[in-house]
Image (cartoon, rainbow, N blue to C red):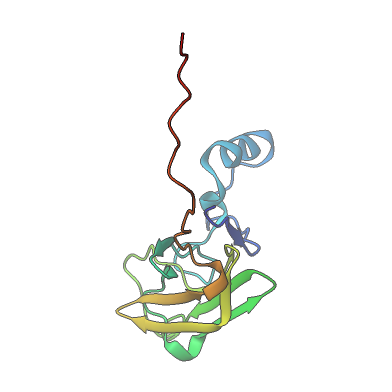
Length: 162
């Protein structure tokens, strides 16, 4: 069974500067277009880090894209079958003036329900080139193994004499 990926966190809900429709039209556009209409581009806002989870032999691998995040700004916890990754991408210096900016800054939190049979005490974590790589070893009892089948040679079917 593949793990469930559940994004968490409360998205920022601020109207874009100078953009307000109000009332029913605003509600309909948000319903169709999604939450991005309520974000101030270039300002601190929650963001969603892309991730993948896949099985590789005797382990499960989780990759979370965290470009621009420092290792000290990442917190990884495993609790009761849940992997929680919390990270924060720092806003550039306040004196920086953007001509354009569509990057999000701030805190993210991703929660993944892990498959059964993983060893929560045997996890490797590395942040390399903007991707957090997590490797979970499977418990020895949870790994698939071949079962030998015993038996005897089939006997010949009785024949009808007569």
